[in-house]
Length: 66
Image 1 (cartoon, rainbow, N blue to C red):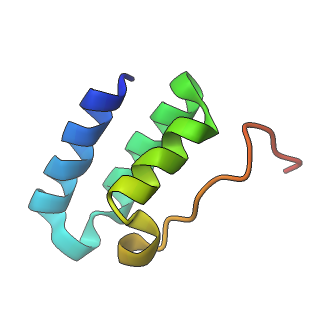
Image 2 (image 1 turned 90 degrees about the vertical axis):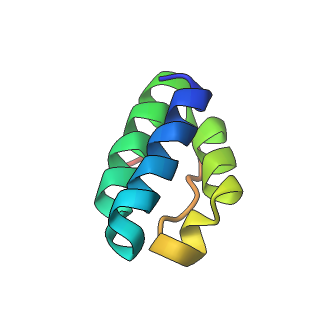
């Protein structure tokens, strides 16, 4: 997913669901991570202040031990 499409989908989820948009946003975040990596995800999290608004934390890296 391209970042511009991700931005539009996040904005649409926020408009449609308000404070209950976290699940829809998480789907977008997961797709962006898969396509573009953690750095792109973290940029979106910062841009939309998702950590404060929806408790969506920035990613440490593209690799996980879980």
